[in-house]
Length: 396
Image 1: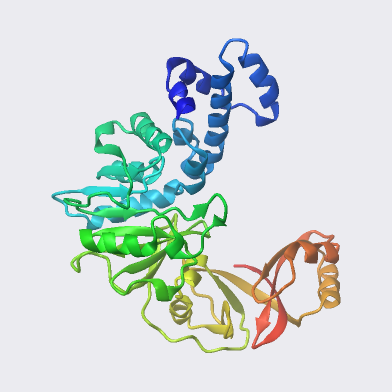
Image 2: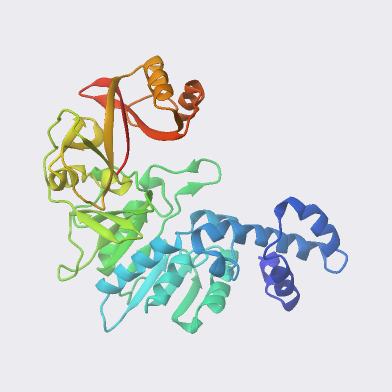
């Protein structure tokens, strides 16, 4: 905690301002120069914080990141700003309007709490680590016009008194220093069972979880939402709220950012397998994780190319925010020589490789093709009705 305290002094602030745009490749020379005028410990702390801010800019944007304070775990576990803002806006619709308060357990450096505070909620963030709590308080002062709407409490979330809480948000730790990423929800800190019980006790709330959670582990009285940002699946959230809100117990939802398009499951059976038609649709990862490919296929009047592959085929093109459309030009049995000959004939110099159900690595395939030409194409390495197949086409 001492390095962060030093950075909050006027001297530390001046150092951080000087390091805003520094090049890490020149860190040694820069550190040598700065240590002529500043204590070595302070220079080391400022350089470390500057590096964390540069990493955090991907999640929070440069404007916020270069005013915030981070711990290494805080950067790693923080929510992307766009996702946090979306989740905060949805929280705003389910909390009681008369008491728009959220208790944020495992608050970390305050990324989610800041998003909720900016959405008009009053937030109490709880975390056990003293340096993390110090960073969260500093971030509230740095970014909020009224920092009093975000209070930070150092406490153990496992024993924190929930009496009087109006709504609850829990972002359990899903990484361990020794084991890395944790896949068992009961090995989260706190465990999923604890979080579910806490949200049920309060009555309204949400739990952030890994998007790979097995569907059978989602409690029946929670809605599960998978969220992607620009095509990358970022998280899943379990929502619980009174029946009068927009949360539907037992529902499965996929939400795509930045558009905000959201698809709710209708309990449809798996689509039929069809011959490959003129168009191939690649569903967004959130749609796949939420097991909503059948809903997208129904809206497209399409079917699957294989019962185990999440590619949708259709003869007509229909607009959808939930899948990317490709027009298919060729269908070939899998074979490197055939593909290489066709690409040479078409003068393809840029090849996008997508795969599902294939062990071939895209980069290795590109090397073997020895591409040269002015044209571009996309190849899908996949299975069609169980048979290894190559589909060539281009985005619509």
